Length: 317
Image 1 (spheres, rainbow, N blue to C red):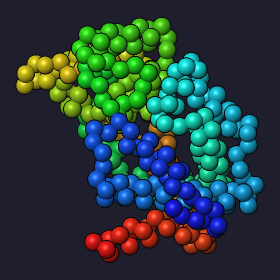
Image 2 (image 1 turned 60 degrees about the vertical axis):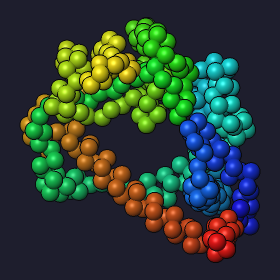
Image 3 (image 1 turned 90 degrees about the vertical axis):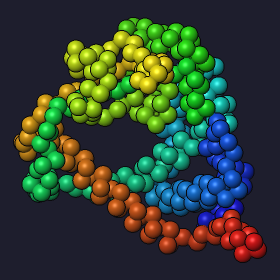
Image 4 (image 1 turned 180 degrees about the vertical axis):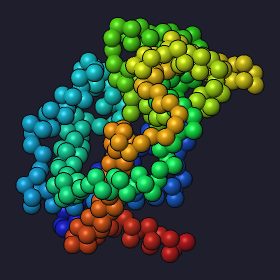
């Protein structure tokens, strides 16, 4: 489907990622949507191949030991049977998994050497940003940094975790089991990653970010429970109820990570400095990454046969 400096990117490789991305979707994509998804996958594979070739020249290819370490970390929360089931659910083999990890580690090493290591955020940069955006650090109301574990009675095909509930009774049983796991000392973020049913935030340990107090008060049950917590503590099982018909939509456990009181945050607050430093670094890294990808691609020989085919077929309609 494409060639990068003579290296082929084949249809089976693209199709494997394509099938993985549409797995569990309630309906199949249209022909145009399918072509667009394949183009996006192919673009990423092209960029990855360019960086892999760059890594080889720089002597930065991931070692077997680095890959083994990542594999062991990924397998740690599961039994072998559970881990094999997750690979099967994603439609990939262990060889596929190791190859993806090797590529990911290698690309991270290239980005770190070529970009991240060269980014410097000075104290002057932080001070200038704070003075220009001082209002951003004036909290008009308390903020609650929370995480959540969610269980629903209806299976979500986009959710891929170790245990799903198919009805209200199973949902109640599952959420209580998760409370028991937390009470036994298991890490909240790990439980959320493996069992929560929110695909958009579960991979981040169920982190909801900071929520203004006024927003949290919109759910009296949740606010009353969270207001009694100290940072690091979590609630019991909280039902999620549809206010219009009182129907239970699911169950959740909330954890209070931190609470920020209202008022102006000053520049000498280490949390303010850290937040600004991270924001400036992230912004510069995104800019330099975009420029870097364009630069290395311009120096590469790339032939995208699939893109040519899409254009050809469009001209025949």
